[in-house]
Length: 481
Image (cartoon, rainbow, N blue to C red; front, side):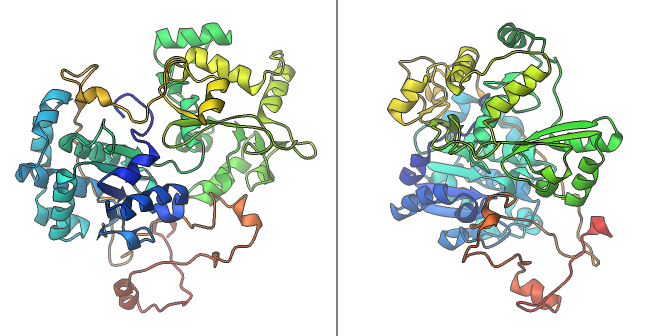
């Protein structure tokens, strides 16, 4: 956000803020550790508002639940913005000093009256108004989201619509007020920080930036591609076209994690060559030509993890990897040697120091300092820098330092899968508290909380379709028909 590839806030801010909005996030099941911070905030007097198509387990703790129709998030966000502006509750001083594009944004949301938003979102106008006034009038507020916002065909626009609300009210860049995209698994943030994105180098530098790319090429001793790569959906499209014929999957199980698992397995099985590097023989590994057994990153290797609050923490090897399993670093270095490049076997710390020499936001984080402080939050620019508990405080300087934050008007478009008499219900997915990701690790033991999957319907929809609790039913999606 605003040039930084991470959330703006620290976890502790959720404990000390006045308002927490969970939008498209069932944190109690999907992010239980983070939800403990939320509960501390609620018990300290913070209000909790949940925006979710389901009355989720998180919503049970909420002061207000907005049961939004799937795919209408932008309509709701624009209506909240219009109500804030119409009521004169926008933070005019912050907008004038720290932002650009407000007038165009105000014009764009003006059509989103409470009545229109109620028809599109299914949320009562009174609830939309309450969300708008509560968020605008809170002294501090944390706006949090997860995959319920991002895993849509217009996920980027969904995020922009929430960022706009924070700019409108000044709920960013100060302690207690921020934008919090909670990551889906541990170290997702770290993967992005290290450049595991198709358009970024480590430290979130653009692949297409000739100057930045040259810095990395000088250290790496090779020429880097000057154009963006493919993200995972584009990779599968390329497999289908026959343009991608070989895949090296490290710690990824797309044969189960892709929404259309049957298509994913068909395309992976049709590759000329598939290599999988993982701890277990996953569904993806079972399709592979070569399987490289890897060590467990949390117990059998040295390195760092980065959490959703941008905190880098050390992990230390506690036990040796079993059998023929090896640290990922050892496997990759050995593979490089087989391909004619002798990298030796650098330690995790040596590779981290190389990263620090290239990524300014990590420059001040030596292993010694990470151990001393129990972790540090980027940006940490030198070894006297304590790190950044929150981002974009510059927006509150008068005058601000750096560029102003832009409003980004976004238009609501209806979901691709329109409802009709034949397909009257929209399916959306979620996560279970007892299960982690595709279940490769958590599915190997029993849990008293695990009872198998079910289709969760509102009582009204169940009655309309003649369904009862514990009844077996077949649901056929439109794209399968």
